[in-house]
Structures are given as C-alpha cells and as structure tokens.
Amino acid sequence: MVTYLSRRLLLLLPTVAGIVTLVFLLVHLIPGDPVTLMLGEHARAVEIDALRRQLGLDQPLAVQYADFWRNLLHGDLGSSFFYRRPVAAVIFARLPATVVLAAGAMAVALSIAMPLGIIAAVRQYSGWDQAAMLFSLLGVSLPNFWLGPMLILLFAIHWDLLPVSGFDGVTTLVLPAVTLGTALAAILSRMTRAGMLDVLRADYLTAARARGIREWTVIGRYALRNALLPVVTIAGLQFGALLSGAIVTEQVFAWPGIGSLLIQAVFARDYPLVQGCLLIISGMYIVVNIVTEIMQAGLDPRIRLT
Image (cartoon, rainbow, N blue to C red):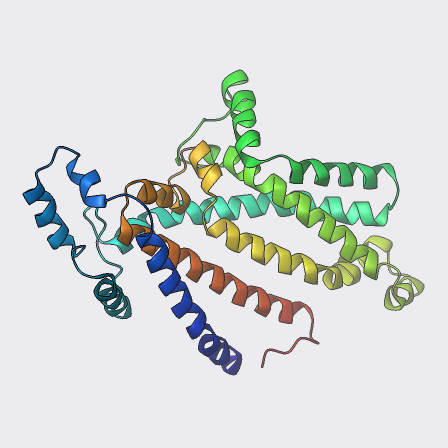
C-alpha cells in the first residue's frame, strides 16, 4: 500500500503542476478588472493604481505566476480581493457544506439505485425491470436546474413541508440532496443492473444454490460483491464531481458551498479565490480517485495495488 501511494503521488506531480498552470492562466484570462469592481467605475486613477500595486496586479504575468508558485509551495493560497481574508480560510469555511451535500446526495442515490438495480436484474424483463429502466431514463433526462425549482414549488411552497434554501439542519438538506441524487441514482441503478446480470448466471452462484443456500443470500453475499466493481468506479467518480461543487444546485437552493463560492469569485474577478477554489476542487477529485482504486482492490482480491 505504501509503495502504491508513493508511486501515485509521484505520478500526480506533473498533473498537479499542469492544473496549477492552467488554473492561473485561465483565471487571468477572465475579462474585467477586479480593481475597478472593488473601487467602482467612478474611482480616481490614483486610487486604482495604488490598489493595483497593493494587490500585485501591476506586475508582469510571469512575475505573478512565479509569486503564485512561491506562495503555493509555502501553503499560502493568497488573500481574497473581495473578502479581504486568506483564501484558505474562506474556502474551508464553505467546505463542510459541500461535503454534507455530496454525502447526502450519494446516500440518496445509493439508497435508490442499489435496491432498484438488484430487483431489476433478478426480475429481468418484468414490470420491476421496466419501471427501473424508466426511472433511470427520467433521472438522466431531468436537469438539476429544472428538477430543483419543481421540488421547491411542490414541497416548499405548495405543501410547506421543507425549507426553500439555506444550510441549517437536516430539513434544509433534503431537497438539494434529492435533486443531486436523482440523476446519480439513475446512472448507478443501470450500472448495478448490468453488473448483476453479468454474475447472476455464473457457475459459483449455481454451486452456492446447489448447497441449499437461500436465493437472497446468494444474491446479497456472493453476487452483489462481484457486481459492485463498476458501481464503485462510477460512484467514486460521481462523488468526486459532487465534492467539486454542484454549482447549479447550490445556486438554486442558496447552498453555501464551494460551487456557489466559485461563481461569486468569478463574478467579482477575485483571482486568488478562483484559483484557490479550482485547486481545492482538483485536489479533492484526485483524492477521491485514489480512494476509489483502494476500494476496488478491497472488493476484488485480483486487483493488486503495486
């Protein structure tokens, strides 16, 4: 395991360097002047020049890039132009909300997808199977920017059962988690069904049935574990995407996560904050991918982490 992690970290160094460079260049290509936004259009030229020097924006792009790397190697993401606070503090204040939303959405997705996919595979071509496939089609087809407002209209406004927005307790998590989890459940249910169909007729399951083991024990203990490999892969990638910030959903429900923070930073031309958000998002995605590979090795002894 130590050897595997060491090799993975070494291989990630060029990736991280490329991400840092790409993030820096893309951020500085955003049209608009952050100094003008901060001071207003009627600010005097002297004030604009003074603030630009104070923020280091008067330096050539190459100098700013070198300073960015120097600060990053010391663990300093810089200070936010808009919040006037360290970027790390601003991001990590929003990070718990994003983690809670991602975990809630994944819990919703798995609680729907696993039973639905298993039943659809066991009852192939039955009404259960057709209903599961119809759900997966609808789940993938309904965009978050439509499903979220529909859930708000139904459960928050019409029936007054759940709050509309915010991050204050379990009740505020339900609607955004369902909005995000529905599409993911549709994908995972199809993967679960496909994986189960591949193993249900395997010889070792026939042998288990011949020993008198109950059918649902055969399915739950023997078949499901082998069918989970593609499901874990997709779930890991999707969880990384959820941690990256479900921007649309966070905007719809006024969820104070990294996704909404990134949108605010882009509109404010807050270069350090945009760079910090993108770097944290990339880092989380990389970590989730490594964890997913470790989980795959735990499920399938044939997979060796070397």
